[in-house]
Amino acid sequence: MHFESAAEAKVEYTAMLLGATGNVGGQILHLLVQSPLCKKVTVVTRRHVAELANPKVQQVVVNMDKLEEELAPHAKGVNIALVAFGVGKGSAKMADEDVRKIEITYPTAFASAAKAGGALVLAMMTGSAPTRGRQPSTSATWATRRRSRRRSRSTSSGFTARA
Image (cartoon, rainbow, N blue to C red; front, top):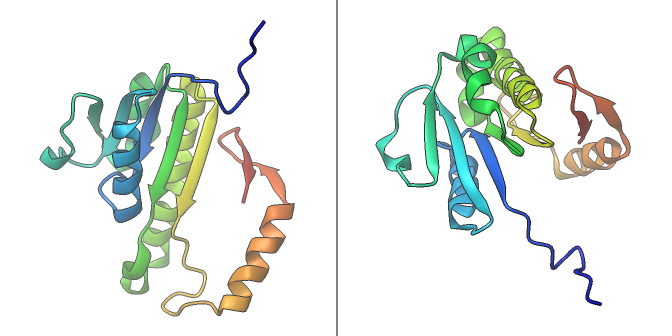
C-alpha cells in the first residue's frame, strides 16, 4: 500500500488576485499562470489590462468603492485569495483617508468577497506606511516581525490573520 506524503500531494486549485498590476502582484500572477496545479486565476483590476491576457486569467474590472458587491459573483468557487496591494512610495503625497482606503478598506472588501465565495485561504500583503515617508530601521522592522508572528487575530472578513 502506498500513501502520498503531504509534499507529494497534488491538489488543483483556483485563485483570485488583487494587485496583479503591481511589482509583487505581477510576480505572483506569473507563478500562478506557470503552475500546472492552478487551473484559473481571477484577477481583480480597476481597468482592463491587455498585458494580463492569458488563457488561465479572467480579468474582473470593478469600481473599487463597490469592490465586495461587484466581486461577489466572481468569487464563487475560488480556493485561494491573494492580496498584493498597496500604495508604496506614493503614500507620502496622499491624504491619510486615501491611504486607509487602499491599505485597509479595499483589501478587507476583497477578503470578505473571497470568504463569502468559499475561499479557504487568504494571503494578504499590503504596503502599510506607519512611518509616512521614511523607512523604519532594520531593528524596528525585525522587532515588529517577531511580535507579529506571536499574534493571531480574527479579521473583519472572517479569516484568521497571522502576521
